[in-house]
Image 1 (tube, rainbow, N blue to C red):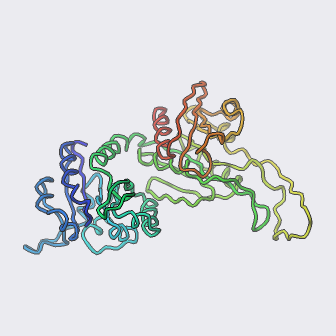
Image 2: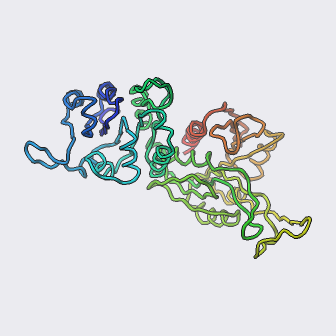
Image 3: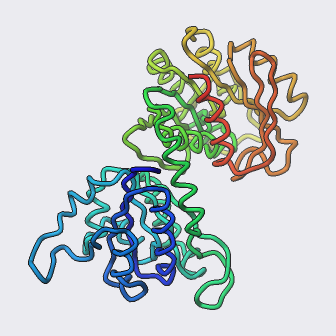
Length: 397
C-alpha cells in the first residue's frame, strides 16, 4: 500500500474509537491518509487525534468557519485511490443508498471516482432490519464493496452481528485489493449466469432452480481484478452495476445463444456458468392453457447447445470454462464434456454434496482441466470460491 492515497470517511458510531488504530496501521503501510468526519463522529473521537495520526488536516464542513475557505468535495472525490467509510452508521448508510447529500462526506461519496468500500457498524437489530439489508444491497448494486459487520459484543451489551470489521482485517483486505485490482486489466470476459426459462404458454415456463449466485460472484471478482466483463444473464434477482460491466438480460436458451454469438469473438475468456435448459416445448401456446383435460402431453425438443457453440467457435487465443452439475458419475460425465464441447476447464458441481448447488450461498466444486488435472475445493462461500476460480483464470492470461 506504499504511496496509495486512502480517503477515510468517519461517521458517528461508537466504533469510531477504533479509527485511530486503523490510521496508524495504514500509515505503517506507508499509505497517505486524509479523513472526512461527520459532525456526529466528533462526539466519539477528536478531530485533533485524527489530524495528528493522519498527518493531514481533517475535513468536516463544506467551508472553514474561521477563514471562510470552501472545502472542494469534488477535488476530495478525485484525490484518492480508494475511499473507505468506517464505521458506517445506519443513518449515513441510508443517505448513501438514496443519494442524500447533506454533509461533506455524502457529497464526496457522490463525487468519488475511485473504488468505494464501506464497513457498517451498528446494533444487531439495526443491522438485520430489512431497511438496512436493502440499503446495503443497493450500494452493492452500485459497485460499492462491503466489509460485512462481524459477530461479537456490542455497545448495547447484546451479543450478535453488528461490530465493525477490525482494523487489522480492514488493512489486510485493502492491501489484497491493491495487489489484485489490475491483475486482469485489458482482459475481456464473457460470462453467462442464471437459469433460462422456456415458455409453455404466456404464463408458464420450464425452468430450474439456478439463482445465478455463483456466476455473479465470479463477475464481481473479475471486476475487482480489473477485467472488462460482458454478462449474459438469465432471470435472477441479483443486480450488479459497474463501469467495467455490460449486462445483457435474456430469458430463453435461444436468446442466450444469440447474445453469445454477438460477443464471443471479441472476448479472450468465456466463463459459462448459466444453467441452460436442455429442452424446450416444441409448441408455445399463444393463450393460457385452460385446466380442462385430466392430462396433457407436452412435447419437448432440444435447445441449442450454447456452451457447445462457443467451444466449436473458439480460437487458440481464447480460454473457455464450462460448468457441470451432476447427480451421478460426476467426474466421468464432466470429463467427457471437456472433449465434447472443446473446453479448457470445467467446474463440476454435485448435488450429492451437502450445502452445494442451486440456491446456497456456499458451494463445493472440482476443477478439471483438459490436461486431466483435477483440483478439489472444500465447501466454502461462493464469493470465496469465486476468488479461487478467478486466481486460476488469471494464470492463463
